[in-house]
Image 1 (spheres, rainbow, N blue to C red):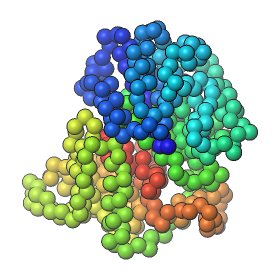
Image 2: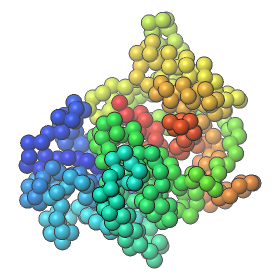
Image 3: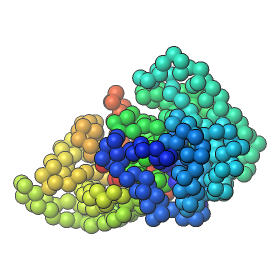
Image 4: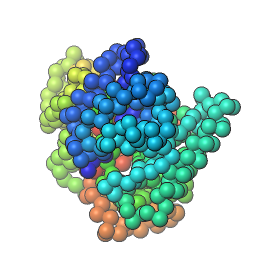
Length: 431
């Protein structure tokens, strides 16, 4: 079973409210979502639908939309969003829904050893949109998430992975700790999925790894109107793959022992595996491309087409260095992207990046990946010596850290591996 997630379907619900009024990217969004799922989904997959499903005001008006969802492949889990006014009592909903659809309302469910706990959530304190009257609803929703998670206590032998599903973001726009993230940490959730954010607000969402949990923003426009696959093939839940702010630390990273051709094959494999949500994807090796300023030699070029027909050209540089990549390397790639007329650029390096390189990459939308020994992804609590990982973890030979700078200048790391490529996939598919 694979797990996918998407939110904010905003089906019309018998109204004349079409989403293209919110931008051209929303035109025919409903058929694009359904077509995408028809192509990538399977009957044994699980699809999480995280709120704002229909604009309908009453349940009977939402039934055509719910019927469309019922006809979609696989099993579906739904939670309530702030615009789901049609959402009535759980008992009435269950009678109206197709048997392939289950609802989560301050509750949990286990499907093929994957546990999902869900509730609507609410705007978090200290958010730019948080007002005094929000406090009571926020506290109530935190309590509901606790109830959902407590319902799994005593059942740990029945599941291997835990997903927390919310409609609202689990943090405020500053990514500060909230009651939701405290519960997510307390119950050691592997994944949190949420929606609600659209347009420019997508940039404010928490995406990537925080503590031991991978966070995914899956509102429809954030995932290019195609359900995002949620990779669960990581570590057992009692092992840690990413540090919290303190007192956890990342293992010291040394230059990986890998041949240059193996390094380039690994990069190509990651790019190809990350392309599952694309309708067309091709990676070619060393290429010479013509630009306005002459001919340029590029390590690799990825050409892809995302759902909706957008054509994307990505320039890929593989730097097999012993010292950290300098700013001028990233500047050159950025200039090549602009001169050739490509859309994106990404640098994979065996040696990490100097701060100036990361600053330029952030300012110009270039992705940076530090390719490392798979053992470097193992992390432990406390300071001092970090022991070797136990053999039962089956860590990959090669892994990567997708590195970016936060607005306050701190480095942010997102783990990459054969079973953990969502950050790369999301970056490739974003427009």
